[in-house]
Amino acid sequence: MFFPILIPIFLLGSIVASFIGVVVARLNTGQSIFSGRSRCDVCDKTLSSLMLVPVISYLASRGKAYCCGAKISYQSPLTEILLGGLFILAYSKIGLSIELPFMLISISLVLALVLYDLSHQILPSSLLYPFVAMSVVTSAVAQSQADFISTLVVAVLIAASLALIHTLSRGRAMGFADAPFAFGLSMLVGGAAFSGLVFSFWIGAISGIVILARRPKGSRMGVEVPFAPYLAAGFLLAYFTQWTPFIFAMAML
Figure 1 (spheres, rainbow, N blue to C red):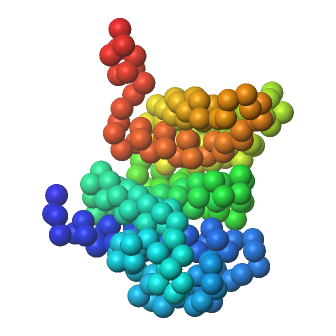
Figure 2 (figure 1 turned 135 degrees about the horizontal axis):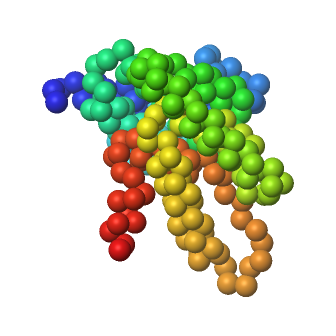
């Protein structure tokens, strides 16, 4: 692996993540995504370019806004580091190929959908369907015709199973939009789709146990947790590691 190329790839990912933060904050609010200066969430002062350098600005300011000293959420630098890391993983896996730009765009859309779902408990169609389309294109570019058809069949079955869960639970177990999201993820990861689905449920189950354990004693209030982040984590974990559930099953025997 040629190390110097990893730096610009990471920087590209962090810059894209910073833009995704703007998209998530402004989408469906009437604000323009591509115009208008960023402002401080507390004092509403316009932020200079130096205040918006991914990761570095946060570290340099020690997590506080330059304009008013208000504490800055750690979500921004974490997502910038996360997407930068995912860009490096994608490059490490598929190299400088025709598939790479399609994969990077798809992963960026995954992050946008996850962040929006965490904030609003919904997957917006303006991001969801472009992701599905891009994942199909990425799969078509990366695979032979036979493998593409096989991936398509598996993706349809996975999406149908989640749609069935939504229907049978009357929307209590998961939202209907999780089905096309899982379809897109299945197309994106190809042969790792089934493992990704299993890992998604495992990660969701572990997170659910942690959330229930941390809930105040005696509280009976329900907790709504979006499933899209677990789907994204499970499918990407399976794709980049090529782990399978059978590895863990065998280890437990």
